[in-house]
View 1 (cartoon, helix red, strand yellow):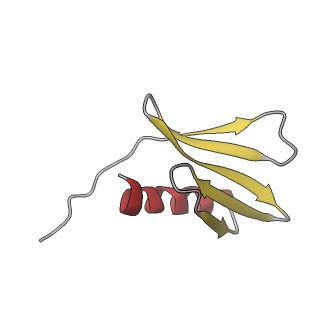
View 2: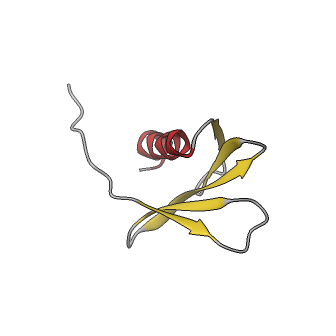
Length: 75
């Protein structure tokens, strides 16, 4: 058995007016999959559905972590 690879279109939107640098990761016209905040030099991603927290050292890694988590656990 092999799993078919699937591309997921996403948008990463910076949210203004927050005390921390914050980005929302969304699937256009569908739903938010998580928020990423820059905390003490690291990026903290919180999943929308389950509120799980994932830490990464870069924004790109944090986005990838959120997408991986979403694909594995929330689709």
